Length: 413
Image 1 (cartoon, one colour):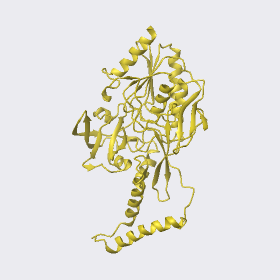
Image 2 (cartoon, rainbow, N blue to C red):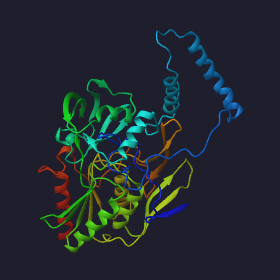
Image 3 (cartoon, one colour):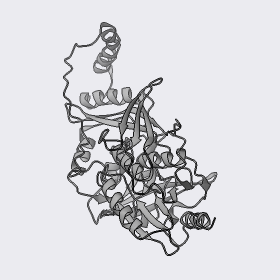
Image 4 (cartoon, one colour):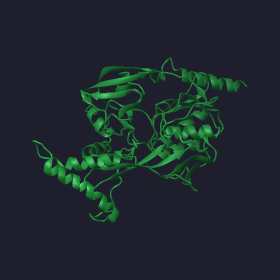
């Protein structure tokens, strides 16, 4: 089994394509210019026409038979759009894989991604995922127009300005929701509550998004509090600096808040986990069934390996958040408090194609140190505290209050 330590900057992507920020596409910082992380893997291998096996060539004969029949016999009052027919075939091929996170992105939507790399962030501010063909909110960004409008984790966005979004790729849907600062978008939202569902419309004014990666302070009750909003390329340095400052103030414990954090870079997840864990396993990456996998380990020497630790999680904690929380839980380093996490246990890499479109492929699954696969399942907290995600950091934040109580109880023992 291969081993990679926490100080290796390997695997630039962890977040799924579908963790798109509605400010334009993937706009929570993970793939932005200036971080030294590129979204697109440029094509460096050419595949000349005809360079296929005889068996595959025979299979494609059926495809061309169907193509020519359509060209010869299909009744239409407008010319056939051959480009769209080709794109439709690619979409169908990708859809046949049965993986929501593996997607083909047409040139227009791929251009949205590249525009986002310029660092312009304007939109409503929410992380979304494709769940069973529906655009589903993973979490609104802190203090974003989406959060202020009452958008919650788990909400399903059905329409944008009257345009149905069901069945669209995430980036295609995002392109309908993004827009310049000061303009508005009307969303039709479905909210599930227990066994009932309600639908409502909300108009949100887009804004330029600016939010802190890390927020921290010592709470009046004594514990230190550190909130991480995403795992971008600056996150590990900022977390290290915040922890150093907190520990100087001698807190009685530490609360790491990963609620509504949709994830980000694998390297950042391993680096940040290394601040809390002694040397040892953080996660295992496997690229196929039976694969022994690649081990990612904490580097050792973290500055918060001894202090009593609580990690706050909820249904908006995904991807890299689950890597850190899962490692803390499996290695019994701290206590998870909150609600079940999102359940994002796979990795994707995008490949730019020659026409400007992109193919985003799931290339691996990851597992916790104890070998747990959390994809579609999530992590169960050690102490369950159900709470409306919109109450995070409000006066009714029962999860934060329970974390404070837990650390005070631990101190009193």
